[in-house]
Amino acid sequence: MRVVIAEDLALLRDGLIRLLTSYGFTVVAAVETGEALQAALVEHRPDVAVVDVRLPPTFTDEGLRAAIAARAAVPGLPVLVLSQHVEQLYARELLSDRRGGVGYLLKDRVATVGEFVDAVRRVAGGGTAMDPEVVSQLLARSTPTAALTPRERETLGLMAEGRSNAAIAARLFVTDKAVGKHINNIFAKLGLPQSEDDNRRVLAVLAYLNA
Image (cartoon, rainbow, N blue to C red):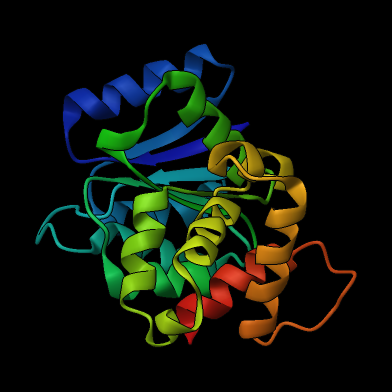
């Protein structure tokens, strides 16, 4: 599995290279600026990109903007953001693009190496990997926040992490039936009709963020 890494801190960049290589990934490029990232993504078209938000020269949102620009050139390019910050505007734009895998993790909240590697693989496979804190911050800025109950928002956050109904039930200490009820309420409030589309769970998160 081919990976492009964008991280401006040399020690962390080298650590990511060594870590991913040890788990069978092939790092085809490791860059430290947004401009270099965009060029590397378009050139190598990796299976997944691991991207920091704040890269030189301004250390604001170069990583996210470069990833979004690369996805415009290479539709569906999987991107996993690994950062210390939640950049509201461009995070919404990245997450609203329904083509290809996408994820957003906060560096200081990644509990284990296995959790991180699993997230990389999930995004490379077209799935999602969302830190609950990222979801919480984005949802807090969304207009229809009042439409969902606190428990429904909590359920939606766990859905964004890619968890199954059973996993959500275990986390919230409720029954599968209760989780199903919460999810149906979420779909109804977000205007997502009954569908056979398995991505409706992801669409629920995206629709909420885009509202």
